[in-house]
Length: 138
Image (cartoon, rainbow, N blue to C red):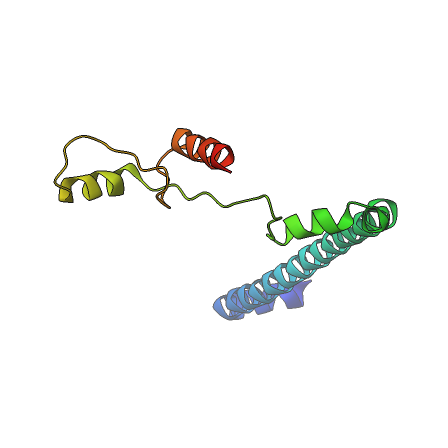
């Protein structure tokens, strides 16, 4: 004990700095250990989540998708999933009101005239009227 007290009296600053350096190394070691622990926990959670997702996907495939693809309506549904239209289906395009007003400002006529044979449709009501007129005319 007297030997330690003698060293402390003889080299107080060196011992303080030595203990400080040891503390810094201990802190770095503790931080690395904690970061390792957190990364392992995160990896375990992501593996468990991936396992659940794969299990759900497999259950969906076995319980629903196989029966879905074997059904009589599979071709019909797959065509709609792939954005393929049937013979009696049409795409209706709506234009913004701003574009409609610009188009009207260039025309000489001030009265709004709707040509139902025109390809552009400006509102759902016009598309419905166009649809009905096309059905009646055929």
